[in-house]
Image (cartoon, protein in one colour):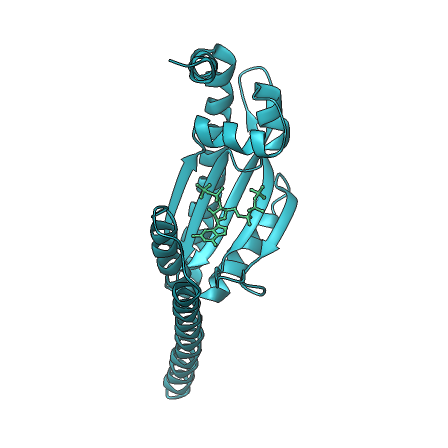
Length: 223
Ligand code: 0O2
């Protein structure tokens, strides 16, 4: 075991680290519950679920250490809490693009949620074609004798955006193969196709709802 991995092992076993990770886990639970409540409310209101799935994760120790190193910061509990925004992460996969914004706005309206930063990669996709809405928020967690304010990263995206991002992530991690310009172009084209798919499904959803409200209105008049 080299010196660094001994340090990692020691930190991982420390009470402070275990407690900090438990607080992040609680913050994930708080946010996940908020999204589940919103999903329930909107499914009652619109008769469909805006959320397809929610995934969550705690960043692993090695990734935290690497990120702090890249920022030129020490690998300490304080540095983790003060400088890493994505230790607690949630990915909310939505049905339609409109749901992404509707859910994000509904969350941000809640008075215990504070927005730290927002990156809209749907309005402004990354050069490789990546699309998602990223929020960094704080949420309070209530312990027996204290209240702690925890940071959580939330990525909201549609099923099509998630499909592209998951496969791109898998391909990117095949590090032994260098990505050629041609491969990057192909990935970008796939992202464009997935964006087009979202636009078409959104348009279709609007048509269906329009037809449904007309049918209800006409049916109502007949009474
Ligand atoms: P992991 O394992 O998913 O956590 P910052 O965190 O703000 O210091 P950055 O790069 O400015 O760093 O943050 P940004 O742009 O908000 O992206 C952070 C996360 O978004 C990434 O986390 C990915 O999960 C996701 N992401 C961003 N760009 C891409 C992309 O091009 N493709 C895919 N598949 N995912 C992306 P991590 O830390 O990379 O990894």
